[in-house]
Amino acid sequence: PEECAVFHCRGCWTVLGDSLQLCGQEPPGLSALICFKVTSDVTWEDSLLVGLEGALLGCAYYLLFCRSCGLAVGFILYSSGSELAHLRDLFCFFKDSIMCYFLKNQMIIEASKVNFPAVTLKK
Image (cartoon, rainbow, N blue to C red; front, side, top):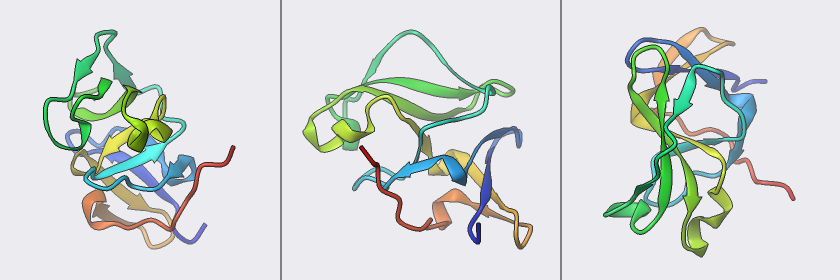
């Protein structure tokens, strides 16, 4: 409760999710918030993309968009190597595309400047 935040689209401030849905650690090389639920204002296309460089090299994923302004806000990993397998079918927000509104102190901070407490996936 101390760190409760609402995630907003950087482009238009639409609410996309919140910190209560965080369910995993930020993977090395990926600046992302990992969530198991998002709002209905997050959409994705049916076509898969394949990562050609960086941490998503060789991974197949769906790109997530803000329904209101169309900004690419993250991805859903469809297939990957074993190092990212735990992220498959989860919602991964790009930190650079998200703003965080913290409820307790009513502050707005760029997600790329926030480190949320450790959360681990439970089986």
